[in-house]
Image 1: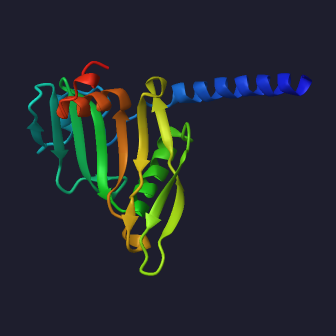
Image 2: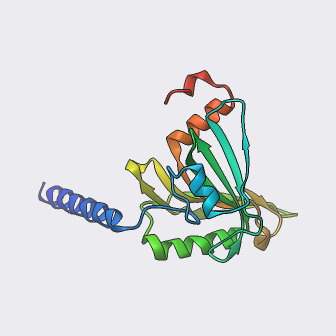
Image 3: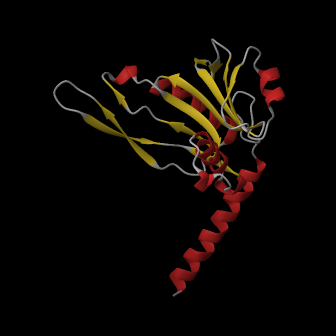
Length: 191
């Protein structure tokens, strides 16, 4: 009984400390773009954005700046907008090593991640595939709905040639709604 009470008190104290640290850090952003920014802010931050709209009038996405970098690493940036507001920023087409080096820079800016679930990446080898676990750092805002994280590459033929890894900032609920509208799924039109 006594040890349960001590553990409970320590758990509550740890949660309060973590919440306090989270509230002190700067708002989550990726290359100066935050969730909720409008298209004009995005276009001012990254001139030359190429944007497209879809059949649903509330949807748009923009590819930003050829030759863009994040944390000094080359990338392409995709921004998705819902009702004219940013809900998704993807700094992608980078190597796994580059993506994790950007994450290291983000740790310097935002501190320790709020959580680090493990994701497995399969490396395709000529004789035998190999599955490697990676910690996936995640910083959270808005009750955990806004997430800054890495999307590890899924497959590669050589360890140093991972492709399609990305650092992503998203509003999970709004991004689900974005895809629902894009795909004409009436069930998730009004999350």
